[in-house]
Length: 384
Image (cartoon, rainbow, N blue to C red; front, side):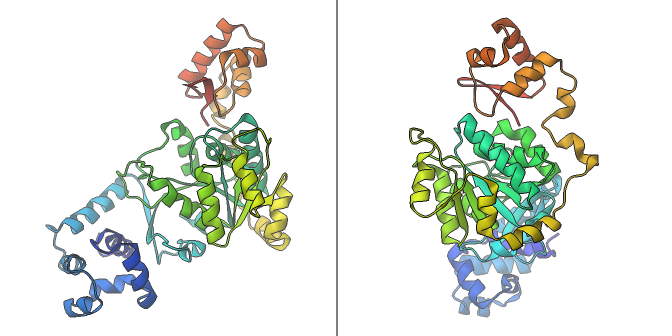
């Protein structure tokens, strides 16, 4: 178990007093950091490593099972095996080259799904968790069309724009990448459990956090640097002026990525972040060709020719819960199609479907029991 290259890289991420600053410094002189694990005590001390770091490496060399770090690594490896999580370390053939060159690149990625997709050309689609119906529709449509045109959609599995972007790619029959801020044995937010399963089945979910790690606020800015680092560009669909999406856009600019923004109403608070980005030089887009033009037509054509598309054998994955919808009657289907990925009131749904309130509530209950709909503050919403 400990002899694998992935285990060695994992151990380096767990070493005490060997944080990001030390790793960057060592990588500048020792391209293969796992060489540190073979050095003698005198050499390790000569490198200026902290005493606790040296002690940890010596415990690894001796396979000291009583050592705290060695025990932690063994447990992580066991958890990964239990939850079908693959370790993609710095020198793994599937570790994405574009990510390797960002500031503070993770030494190890935890992956569920098809890790070979990491080498594909990607574009991030991000935006507000409280997106408008129009914003959610933009996210789905742009994700679907960009997927068809050869780009792999990458986002953060959050509510709102992120979830709509993933669903848009999947519904169009293409893979998608979700970067999360917790261990891969967990799903956050819980409302996206079904969506997460779809992503794993037809794409991949990535984290830099080991199994058992809960979602924490501090993890999401770290997650954002991976979303932008994996992507050739970032499309911001809707964002407030203090949105986390703007952090991702800033990171993308620092990493030399393109930033695109969809404009909205001057009266909409979730459009102000996009307008601010456009003022700062982001490309204003209102159609997919605007993005492909900026990225380069030659790349677009070559990417499209190499694009894997989900075939007829995966037809049941192309629409959310298609097999379940097929078992419903026309009234439930009408209610489901009237719903969006943000909460809608029963009054709005009655108006959209033409159903009386008692029939609407009955249909919503059936959809909720089938796991297609959830109650939320302000009404009901689809679960992708």
